[in-house]
Image 1 (cartoon, rainbow, N blue to C red):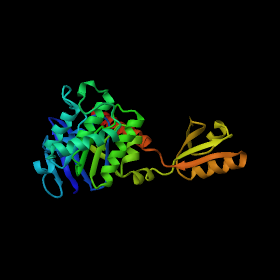
Image 2 (tube, rainbow, N blue to C red; image 1 turned 45 degrees about the horizontal axis):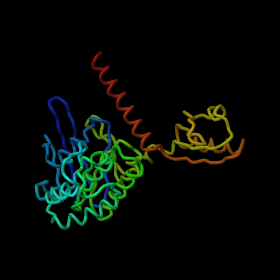
Image 3 (cartoon, one colour; image 1 turned 90 degrees about the vertical axis):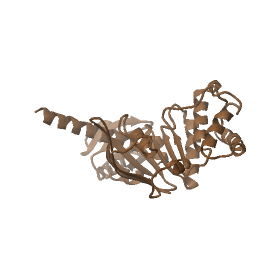
Image 4 (cartoon, rainbow, N blue to C red; image 1 turned 180 degrees about the vertical axis):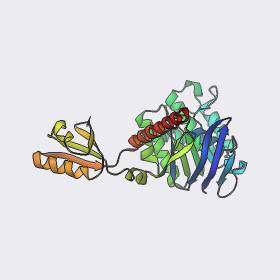
Length: 310
């Protein structure tokens, strides 16, 4: 089952929330949807689920509209968590499971397994309001996946979780992917996005500014980062043409270079004048790319406004 978004546009009054969006999410693939607050991510999720209608374009699941029958096969984790605080964990999960066509007995058995796998501190008969924030978030996650959806939409699934619990949820998302589910998720932590995503789409002001596999996107920026552990001083490194910045990182330094072949000059200089403890040349991280794209498009927006003002 494949999700296709074709030339979709959505406005609210004079504000364009999403403009000419194209996306394909295939079975067994994880799509990371990134962007600043207000970029159009949540609007995109709401259009997929038919909570709101697109002004233009088409959204299909297996080449057909996303109707109520298809929604039964979707697991949606909203950014605004929606558990009923005075219900027990079990009643909460059974309620959501039945909405997706599961039998209560099956859901009850699966709940026990899920709570064990996600290391939930609490019991099925505990009221949701007695749970910690992190454990309540795990229960919401279980409610999203307990019916084994074919398509997962996860809006900021790791918000507020520590690294250990983030890893637990990330592993379950991978498990769903490996079983053939199509997954689309948003997240502000680029390291999580990089670890989990097969494909990546970045929105800025509703416009698509990056779209491709994580590997291809990073490679397109060239191997312009060097991690170095050496006795060579920053002053000596700065004299090499093409070295743009040097920052301390751990026991070494991270060096930003203008183009990939500068890395060879750095290595030759270090090897000639001192001992090379570590030298790694790679493309910029996804976090760096995100920051560069935001800064670049902010500057373009500023220039456009300045031009209009003139």
